[in-house]
Length: 70
Image (cartoon, rainbow, N blue to C red; front, top):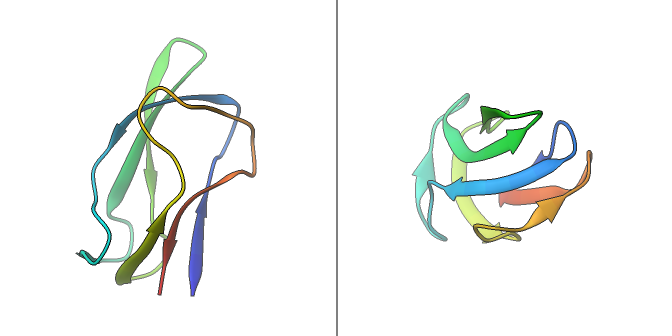
């Protein structure tokens, strides 16, 4: 199981996956806005999306879990 975490403080502007969806390693799962830049957040390994812990508009801190992949 892999947890996709927030790399820095910011705001979620897009969630690109759904629960049950298959993802590949390094696939963009969430896009965040931090320091006035849009940054993709990728999954560290392939698998199935088990849980999405955020929604568009959420403000998150570095280290917060965004998506769980198993």
